[in-house]
Length: 335
Ligand SMILES: NC(=O)c1ccc[n+]([C@@H]2O[C@H](COP(=O)([O-])OP(=O)(O)OC[C@H]3O[C@@H](n4cnc5c(N)ncnc54)[C@H](OP(=O)(O)O)[C@@H]3O)[C@@H](O)[C@H]2O)c1
Image (cartoon, rainbow, N blue to C red; front, side, top):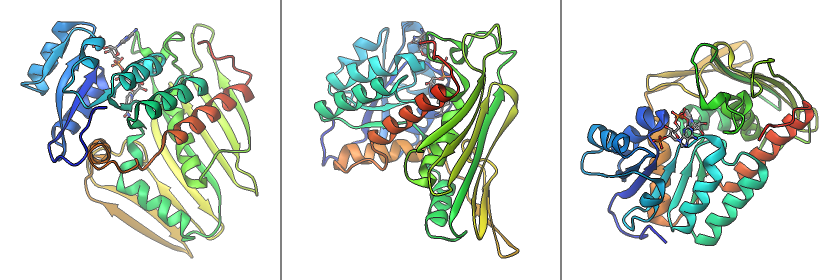
């Protein structure tokens, strides 16, 4: 297995693909992290990997296939930002090659895939984390702590949404049936994940609808009510056909917590509002890079052998609820 617990050397990361999210946010986060560095980048196109290495990771190795990177004994952990339908295959291959895996959300394209990924990583003795970076932002940790501590009384409703307009962006992995696209898979998974984090488990029952425009391979809008039992509900929606917006709101019988930018707050200051007893408290969070916090936590666990803050079982439960939402909407996922 890769990763020698106890050494202080930075963890050597390999990046599978030249995906946008890696180029824009995760490779810079690893390069500025305290305990990791990008040691190799692989692409289906060697020249693209070489260009990215030259631009963002000088001295790293460039590979023209993902297999070659996985065969590199110096790589300890891989970051997988491939299209959703390829997460399972490459996570399992990476685990069998002895690499720890940070895989983009959603972990598997189905619950069965997520279970197979968890099993492969467990059997190989490597770590596996679904890359919900927003969970590492101090604003989310604080909001979850406040809700759990009773600061707004008994929590009964969580409302959250995440949407943007994909209509004029041409070809995109998010609109592909064979690559496991769809608004719930891409952005709706965040509001769902947030509801599960607040209530600490899966909903018992789900009601949902999706919109699949005639020309579309995948659903482009989703709305769902999640029943967590004992009068506790999550109300979530997502879309590729609306103006960009996101929010999350936790409502208790004594107050509420409002997060205007829960999922991609950027690196500037963020504000969370807690309202209670006719009083409104603004809690300000200094700039934080949740991608860097995520990769630093991951590398710390690689080195220390400590368990990750979020176990793969959380990602399996997440995939099961995605499946339940699609089933409740009468949507036959096209992959
Ligand atoms: N956590 C976040 O903030 C966040 C944000 C955006 C996206 N994501 C997730 O990250 C993943 C990638 O999203 P993205 O928008 O960055 O993707 P993207 O820019 O479209 O890149 C996907 C990459 O996958 C590789 N690839 C391999 N087989 C492919 C195929 N059949 N079709 C298309 N690409 C293929 C390509 O790299 P090569 O040609 O170099 O091999 C491509 O550049 C998704 O799972 C998405 O949900 C997460």
